[in-house]
Every structure is written in C-alpha cells, then in structure tokens.
Image 1 (cartoon, rainbow, N blue to C red):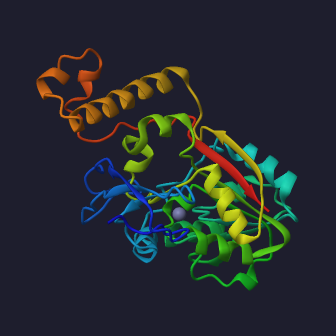
Image 2 (tube, rainbow, N blue to C red):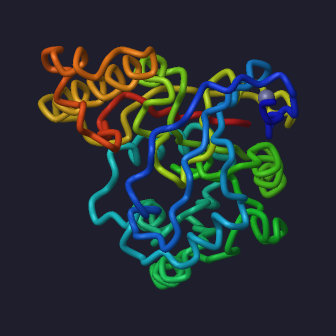
Length: 304
Ligand SMILES: [Zn+2]
C-alpha cells in the first residue's frame, strides 16, 4: 500500500523506491541529535507531486527550524537569482508591499529598494531577530500560525521553502488569502521536470536533504493553480547557484557515477563486476550522494 497524495488525496500513488541516505545527523547544514530515516520517494500521477514518505510533520520541521543558528542560510553576497526575482516583482506585483516567506536574516528584503514595504515570516528565532533589526516587519513565525490580516501583500516571495512543506495545498491557500487583490505568489524550488531530476530520479542529490520533503513540476503548479482559482502566469528553469563550468562538469560526473552504481546494485550486478567499470567504479565506496548544486534544476513560477 502506498500513501495517499498529500496534495490531491489520490490513493493511486507509485512508490519509486528508497531515497538516498542522509549525511549522518545533519539537518539544514547543522548536526541533529536524532537520525531521521530517509524514507521512499512516492509519485502521484494525478497531480504530479513527488514526496518523501514517511516524512516529519510540518510541526516537527518547524520546531527544528526554530533552533537553527542565523548563519545556515545567511548570504552576504546577492544570490544569483535575486535579479530575476526582482524582474518578476516589477512585472507581476500588485504593489511594492512584499512579504518574504522564510526570509531568514532578511538578506533578499534588504537588497530590494529601501522605499518598498517589507514583511517577513521566519521560524528561526535568531534569524528573525536579525531580519527585524534590518527593517523587515516580522508578521509571523510560520505560515500555519500567522495572521493574514497583517499582510495585504502585493507579492509574496517563497524562495527555497515549498520543498520543506508536507501539505503544499493548504500552505498556498493560506498565502493566497494573504495577498492583496491582483497580488501574486513568486516561488522558487527544485523542479522534477528538469533533465537532471528526470535522469537521476530518486538518486538525485536534492532529495537527499532531510528538510526536503516535497518535489514539484510546472504540471503540479498548473494543477494547484486551478484548485486555488489562480493561474500560472510565468514559469522558467534556472540554476539557483552561480555556474562555473568545471565545477558543474565534475559534480555532474560524480552524481551520475553514484546513480549508476546504485542502479546496477539494485539490478543485482555483482559488486566485483561494478568495480571493474571505468570511471563509474570511483563511486563504489561512497555512502552519501554527491551534491550538484550548480545543476539547472530549479524553477521560478508565478501564480496570480
Ligand atoms: Zn496528487
């Protein structure tokens, strides 16, 4: 029996098999006391959601984020996708009142023009204090708890957050209710309809982070937009990190070798034979999946 889809509730889901093991005891780049089991990747053909099962509940995840130090996702340099996000705000926002969900230390908000009205939601206590000190009006601790009447945002930005959410429809429904009329949601997340994800499937590095529990495609956002009475008005693929060809190639070869070794083992190939394969064999001793942070595997999507 596979679990029902947490988005469309369909019972006809497909278990794609075990997800890669986590780096021992690491959560959000920080050491965790208790190890979390990685679980399996499950696909829902009806709405195209992929999700980790079993996964921690949203409440348990929020508790873990609360205690993260303010350094984990802080960035001193503008992130490579911020300019594109700004262009999307200029094109689609109904006003210059912007709510950043998971704003962390408020780096993106601080980078936007000073004249804009900046609001934030952030579970990490330390990070939220820093965001408030930099001029972001903090209106809540988590999407589940915040008071939508304090928002009235012309745009809500949600960068690298929705992959951490186990109940994405309820999450987006709440954010929609926090929008001003004609406001928009601008989301950035990993995309399962990009070629690295398609080729490497459940062996893909993005699914090896314990805090990543849901995985999306443009088809899923079109499905959810219809449920919410909204429309996908923009979708584009990108790399969320600055591209450097040599690192991109090295990391790409490493993760491909890792996935091939895993697939050959699952197909019953003898270990001795796999160890004879050129290049591929270097991945035999690896116990955790190599990261490919520069891959073209993210999606910007705007819902209006
Ligand atoms: Zn579904």
